[in-house]
Length: 154
Ligand SMILES: [Cu+2]
Image (cartoon, rainbow, N blue to C red; front, side, top):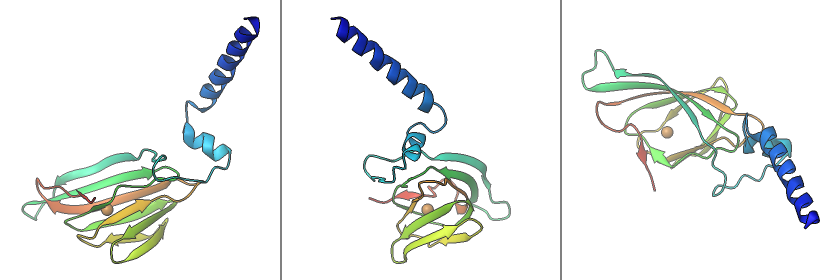
């Protein structure tokens, strides 16, 4: 009985130490990074994206059109959903690298300081393949008022 109590207490000690170390700032990202874990699996590891809307307003002077400007931060190993756009989309990479698989255009990697124009209507999927650097991008897009600017592709 006493051995079991000691075991349970030591497990609580270990777990609480673990969670306080990794609870803030990145959680599992930090845990994996600290251990040099690079085996990013599509199914089990899809960390969350940080999205900030900078502009979402009617495009003045062009009736029925809306402009959206967003800032995105993709964590290490991020794999985005497959989608397409009915209108023009411009992606500017601020930090890190953005890897984009586009139907009909193959795989391209865009680095910080580079601009990528997404082909209209083609299915695409974005990734941050890095295990050390987050990807920060600005997305500028124009679309029809009241209609989706992004369409999910199965
Ligand atoms: Cu897109």
